[in-house]
Length: 202
Image (cartoon, rainbow, N blue to C red):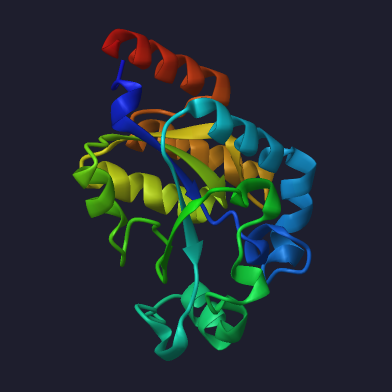
């Protein structure tokens, strides 16, 4: 086993209106495949059942742009539409299915662990293992999972709690992540891992 559940957390990435709802900035690309996949409902169930801390990240752009650097097409696009990404904008809010009681950290980077205090917060709590959910698989999920691995965390992407705009891209990203992290797990496999860890800690 990778860890006890007391040293694990869920890292929930970009479950926000701008990313996965039709009215959001990326809705035209992601809302339909996300809805079709049922990933929101599975992720909500996994977050509840995991019984470990759940930390959400949001991509937001404060006044004066915070840590945003317009060095990619993605960052240039959101920089031009930054009013839609203000922390209090409707599109920046977590989707209601997942927002209840959420601990949320904002940033202006593709990795949820870059440009904020989240990695230090996790390490300070003794957390060394991360179970990652979110959208999109090939963007923030892959970037964060690789980054977390480089920072020394044991990272598992929860493969049926992530989604992308294209199924082929989604599958390719998961195949990459299976090699570059501690391995992808389904929600059921992740819960079994967490429960086994909790039992060994008792």
